[in-house]
Length: 204
Image (tube, rainbow, N blue to C red):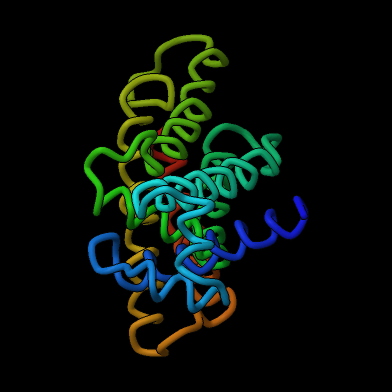
């Protein structure tokens, strides 16, 4: 019985993630979510007292998926390249996990959403960039990772990740349901390969 309840709960979270991702929080319907999950409204309210509580569960799933992806990133390539790898992992999460896209949209739709999805992964990247400051023997004449550059690099990362999300949503809008596999994350990776030498030069 408990296993069946767990499966139903997970099916509801997945169906809700798809609904929130496509329509946003305000337009999402519990009736549509229950039909997509193959359950009744009664089953929805049994597991979640309100749409807000269901949205919280979807958001938590998206946060967990993103956090897990960040933890899998190899940090041995140095702070800057590791930060870029972490950003790429976030984009792959957006591409492959509907709960992650839903969490990103719920942050915009619900001002009281906490903790914030973008804040979570950007803080992890910021901490990775800041780690370079401890390895610098002295302050160079030009901006370095340990001085002014980290905030600029972080801003660039956040802008590009949000741009990738917009690209993904445009694909979903024009292709109705599915994201073309790896199309956005591959483009994101190629962009960073192009701009990374300039970023590395400006931070040395």
